[in-house]
Image (cartoon, one colour):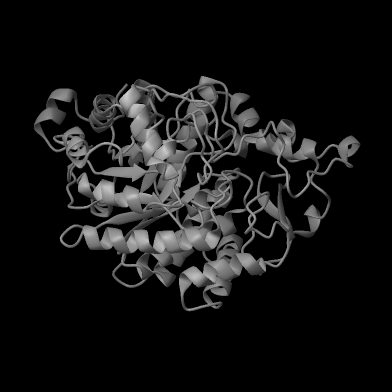
Amino acid sequence: MRAPGYPDDAVRASAPRGAEPVAASSFGGFVAAAAAAGSLVVQPRMGFSDPAAMRRGLAATRAAGATTVGTLTIDSYTRVGDDASARACLDDGVPLNGYPITAHSAARSRELLAGVAGPEFPVQVRHGSSVPEGIIRALVAGGLDATEGGPVSYCLPYGRTPLARSVENWARACELLAELAPAPRLPHVESFGGCMLGQLCPPALLVAISLLEGVFFTRHGITSVSLSYAQQTHAAEDEDAVRALRRLAGEFLPAGTDWHVVLYTYMGVYPMTEHGALRLLECSARLAVRAGARRLIVKTAAEAHRIPTVEENVRALETAAGAAASAAPAPVGGGDSEVYLQAREFVRAVLSLDENVGRALRTAFARGVLDIPYCLHPDNAGRTRSYLDGDGRLRWSATGGMPVAPDRAGSGALTSWGLLSALHGMARIFDGSDPSDRDPRELPGAWAESGAATSDPADATTAVPATAEPSTAVPATAEPTTATHARAAGPAADDPTATAGPAALPTA
């Protein structure tokens, strides 16, 4: 169904797209114009190796009853720089789990985008690569100038590329994008930093990494950026996080930078039921509006089961747009939130280490000033741990060398039972909710009843070791059920979003 307030197909065909006509000459400009018109921009995850299928997916996204931007997701071979394998698959007719932009010619990519992408429908290239230079060259040659990633967020927590090398790669990539797409084009880079680990990373660290990557981009010639934050487990805490990210952007990004915040619908274990999945999506859309995020990356009702179809993606876009239309910005309270204060401490501590932001990031991880919980990358200190309190808020139980103190109530070891319970908590709450509940997390005892914020005394000796994650807990940023992060056959040694696995062919 169409989101309320949107025109029918005949009207859309003869007028600018969106609930309110918006036009801009860049990705960031389009989002700014949509925000000025009162519209939340919604965006799917989507990638096909076949240009015709990719074009159909983009066209369906553009035609959705919502203010949308398109996604062109890159396949796993291209992400790790294995262009030869991507080309071999194309030659042999083997489908990939994304669009191999470096294997297709620039002319083919331009043909795919012609008449679909443009000022009224920007398209962003999403890739997951710590070696993005080839992708940057190909996307600009194909007529695009918006992408995402970052030196930390596309290296940690699941990749193997050394952080120092990723920082160097991303510095060159940003400078290359700025050089190849000069004025009047305004190249745009989104930080993936607010999505680190997907779930169970306390918001202040997500906010800080996203902001620091944004600063890094601007130091290397990018003047239009977006800062990400992934919806977590407590609505009020998430609002604080988005507001903190916006406030810190105003404080630390250079004057004149075009920026906005992009929210990701929950990236952890997703509800199994249709009503639970849609309710969580709607909550994320309302959160975006209340807290001031201007763009939302959606998830579908099929997320827990399989790769969604194009039609399911369109439904998710329209569902999110409808929920956003029913929400309004929340009044901003006085004082500094805990998330803001902690995130500011992280940012100040890192920037004080070196005037060069790239070196500062490397030093911060080497000294444990930044330390991602449950992250196995060798450049991460691995001395921090988090837990969910009785209200569903994310807290620090151990902070290692970071400039924040742990929560005293969380000093006990997190058991394997407790970790798995926390990982599945949101799915249990939303699957068990009444369809009329706007946000079931706000019901009395929601987290206690889900069992997600408790630990099993009988399991107290089975604390999860620092170097291992339970085999049943799928890393949230791997998202094997989505077209964006599904694995193609073959190695994925440097892919930060997951490890190698069998082919998973996208249908969305």
